[in-house]
Image (cartoon, rainbow, N blue to C red; front, side, top):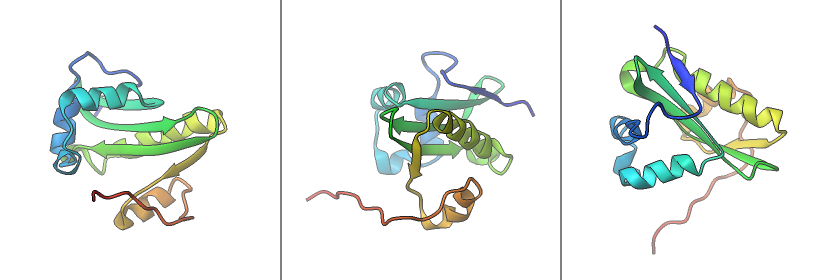
Length: 133
């Protein structure tokens, strides 16, 4: 199975919205297609994974480009999971950050801790988020 990893989408309608829908992320995020495309464009780096020109996975880094980098939005659609695609996306993003000397951080759910430990991540703080009033 050949997977193509790109730092730009293949076309302007790259189906990122459909990917987020297939991952059930939009149930929580509730993003429009336009908002999601803006988020991708404003990220420091994005990796797009394609199989036969179909978007099957992605990951991105939010960063100031000098000090900190936050790995986020790493996901692969269910039928392509457990094939090393997410691992390759992470590897590419981490390599970019490492070359720039950035401090890489991420937030993840408890069940994903063993996955990210494989990349050298360790728990170091308690994450918090602002909830609506």
